Amino acid sequence: MAPKLTPQAQRWRTIIFTLPIMGVTSFVLYKRLVLGEPRRTLPTDLEKHGHEKVVDIYTAGGEGKESR
Image (tube, rainbow, N blue to C red; front, side):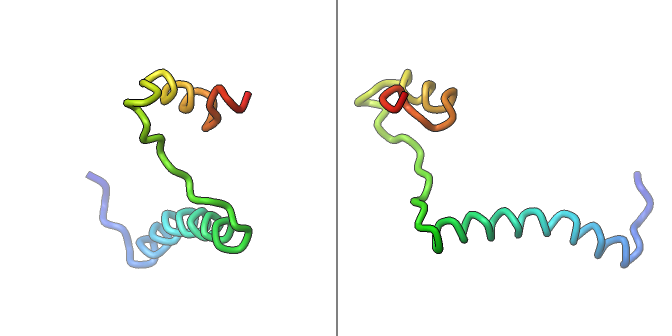
């Protein structure tokens, strides 16, 4: 078991873990609110197109066969 951290070390640990999360969240919100980028959605039409389309979306980085 690791020794207990000092209060200053605990603050640094919190900062190191929190800043990247806040930065990415802020960037995504900026793109969505200021630049007008739409929200990302998961495909929900499994019954209509089957599992092959979902697999293709995940392996093609979010683009289906129609856009190639």
